[in-house]
Image (tube, rainbow, N blue to C red):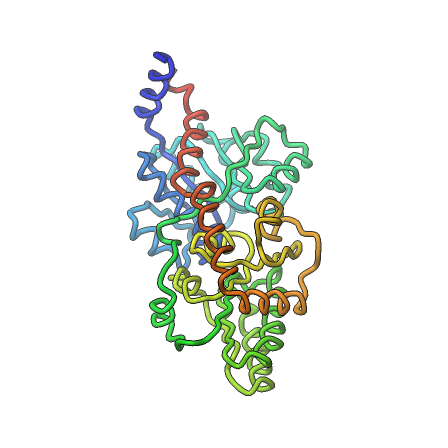
Length: 383
């Protein structure tokens, strides 16, 4: 008992200064994950700074008193490394935590010239493999957000002793069940309508899913006069989706499909919806809000998330890291109709999702695990 108490006491005394690296302060799953994690770690006494290119979320980090070190626009690799080297020295950062391909590339260089250690987080299989492998050589730990990713990372011949599964942390206070009527008032959605939502990046990899959501929306809205579909997100392909939605709305005879930019207060869109088509972090957030999920990701389709497929859906990050079936507009339309026609069942599924998220994905629990991992990497300095 005495040694255990001493260990806990020592951990409380350790000061950890962490610099998190990623590409840009965009509105997206990885970026919000870093924001929520940084806030939670601050509450545990960890000093967190961020290095990235400027973007829409810059002000949000600053609002929460998280130091931000911005890369100069169009900076070359050598210029970013030079800036980071000076920042690490002047701000006494002990640990680098990299979250994407640019972060891995910079970390690999920094570890050769700075006296710091590093942790990497792998959020998906879309990261550049060569930079990941180069950074992994000297990294203390590689965090993977799903077990499916754990198997993939180990297939790259990264030592199993370095790889640890820690799921995405969700702010279960911000993302909690809310009044549907109040959320709809905030978004100017009339009462009495059925709302299906889809939130994602409208980039090359997820653009095809959004197109299928619109096609499914047209099929559903033609037969359900009170159904509307709201798609929201950033990305270069949004203008193409707007054109597709306009064409579909002309055939439907009303404005049933709406394509919006990224919604900063995305919890209100979740709260306004009856059902949410989702994958990745969006699925976790929406489930935390007590919503029924239809899982459709870049790697496959799981459909309505129920107790029977919950484990497999989680393992595959709701279709982003793996899946059995392809995503089709017909499957989406079928499952959306099923949920909209069974509201009591949908409510029960929402309760299941909320309880699971609080138990397994609370950012408070996740941040404690990551803090302990940080301590393991800097502990030698306190021995």
